Length: 387
Image (cartoon, rainbow, N blue to C red; front, side, top):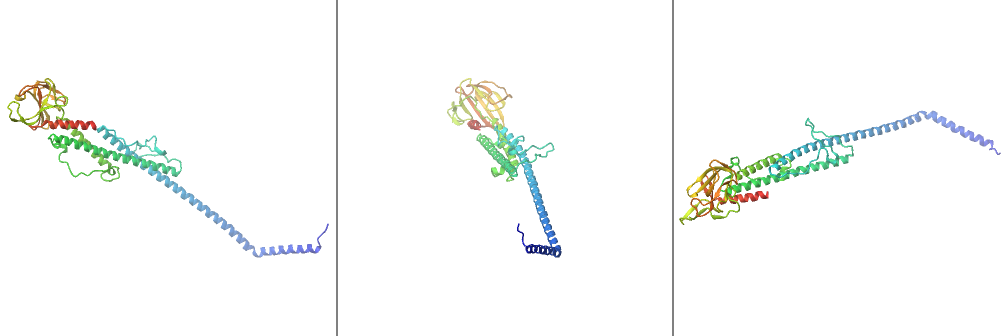
């Protein structure tokens, strides 16, 4: 085996010793600086780690606060939705009540059912204490929860608007009915305000309400005042219906009446001179039933000169009807009769040239053309048939 020269071994040993000596000297001379640098680096690493931990903790805290705030906001919106649902249910009940008065069930769309809430929001009615309660918000993403609540709020908005529009139509329809009935009554020569003192002394400029005034947003009078207007208008219509039903608007004989001699000036069949005919002569067969044209009280039932056998009925409000030339009288004075009741039989008694019914209407003792009442009654029947 070949061995390196001794000189090379000595040189290497001297170099190693030199390096060790230099390193030892460096450590001896710079020991404090090296230690300080090491400590500084460790401190900096620790501070950076702690700062990162503090930042992460702050982010977690902020996220927690944001989530709590979001849940609190959603909870407040759900509570508001509960209140709106309760309001819509009250409106629904009020509208349904109006529907029963006009024989028209009012529908505005189904409200969210407490047992089957839309979009997963468990809306429940108020507890016994009167405070609305709602469950914990659904455990799902914030986006899903927000989307579901937006859909629910939109649905409630739609229902509210639909109720306002439906109420507007009720007011309009009731107003049309009142105007039609007042017009029909006025055509008879009667003043509707005189017949119904509760409507006397009313008026003012017409200020129509549109649907925006009815959606509860506070525009104009709002839903509550319009609901009150609807009730008052429906009440006026009901009173006018009752008044119309009390007026002699029905036919005194069955079928379409044929007038043989109208109301007004005519040639008298006996004298052939001009005379006032105070009623209508209606063609009818001998013995055909003559019927009351409105409810009332029989004020006379006897022979009355030129009328022959005559029945007079007092319908109130100064309105009286008379049936003349009857072959037979079927009622007695003081008797109450209903519309359509038979009061006698058609004949030719008194000043008559043949079998027919002489029919009169009088207002405060003055004869009025009965045709006004008969035509108004026909129009009223047609209008009611189309309602």
